[in-house]
Length: 139
Picture 1 (spheres, one colour):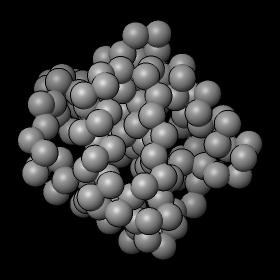
Picture 2 (cartoon, rainbow, N blue to C red):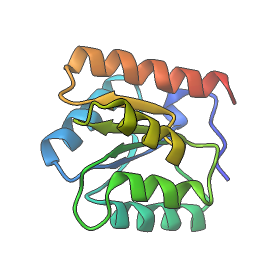
Picture 3 (cartoon, helix red, strand yellow):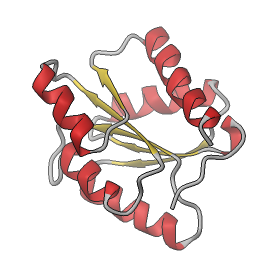
């Protein structure tokens, strides 16, 4: 079970995305926001392995930033599997998909936020900051 810490510096974040450029963009943005405990997984299967390893180490993720379209296991499958064991962590789905049906499916599977690609870095910082701050307030 995930508990959200009192401040950004103590957050433990998992980025699940197969695009290295996007991984670096998210990691850099988080760093500017004083979030430094960041793990990166290239697909949903690798993400679930990271979740399990961190849970076993007593260091669960508080925020997960998940791409929808990835090889091996996509983001929707990952979120659905993750939510079977953790209902408290904040899940942010990031995708180029724009339909209402996709948004609704992401919400139904357990995503708390839905960010559409491409993301402007300034907008990403603003939206990511708002999502993290909301999580911190709802501890």
